[in-house]
Image (tube, helix red, strand yellow):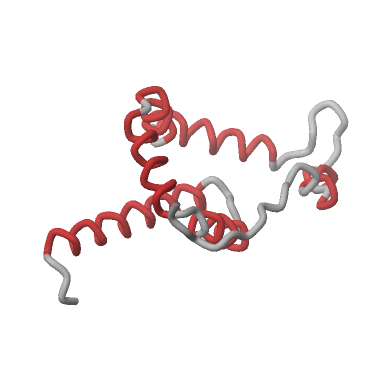
Length: 121
């Protein structure tokens, strides 16, 4: 509460940005449990690395263009069309979408990241 106003503004802007990112994940169909896992991973990134990563992301013009495209109305419309199509039985096999939900294979390419203490070197 005793922080300078510019730091408070930065904190509020960061919170607003984080809420927006979480909203995008929710809109894309990411579950609450997955969001929690993502947040856990992001909070374990050492702050020095995160600052460098944020700087690289901000300077990456291709990535910024892609992020802008993901926020476009055209992309959101295409995502809705895709969700609608995928919610129907498969055209070729006639299988219901639930037939493709295999929890065993869903985690086949997930690698556990070892937990490290946050430290600055």
